[in-house]
Length: 165
Image 1: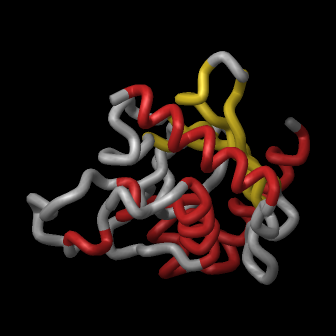
Image 2: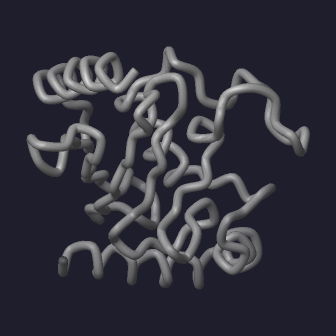
């Protein structure tokens, strides 16, 4: 299984290297391990995260693409859908099948037809438009809903820190 996962990861790396989406860059941390990637995501325009460059790590399972990678921001980012430790909470990264809590439909969750590019674009979209219905960071979600100005200030601190790395 790891052989087919490696071939898939190498093909996706070639694709994303030759035709990178705007605001995104990604690839293996080292050429010796295609199962651990680093990604740089630019904060979307007209959002509190504009101009930030946020670094994330993607750890791929040996049975990729049957199961999704785990994604964690190395950059500090104050966001409703990112846990304080950097883990990303987004449907596309949840295991395939039915949601045991009944919150997500199976078509919102991981599917082997997804790709690294789709993951990163979904995360970029999530950064721009958080889902506060099931937050990973309750404090960020509360500020997003109740005090946008304070949220913007906290987000701006994330942007500043991302540029200091």
